[in-house]
Image 1 (tube, helix red, strand yellow):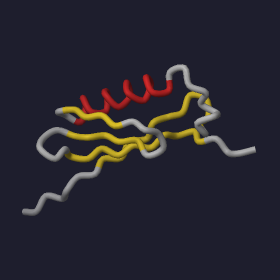
Image 2 (cartoon, helix red, strand yellow; image 1 turned 180 degrees about the vertical axis):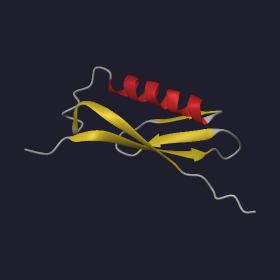
Image 3 (cartoon, helix red, strand yellow; image 1 turned 180 degrees about the horizontal axis):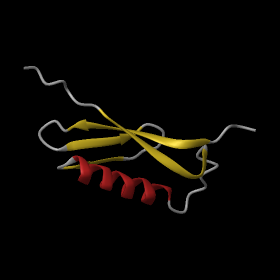
Length: 78
């Protein structure tokens, strides 16, 4: 019996031209937004839609997995 993941991890990075891009590490979900709040809201919606109707166990996920988001920002040099 394999262990099911209870958490989906995602990384948010600044976009190439503007805004932010969010990408899940365990599932094929990528989205974007102009602000961090918009990007995270879009990510939650995209993950929900991606998982809707899927067999989570077959995907290696436990029921009702949580979403853990890390934000990668470049340091500010003074």
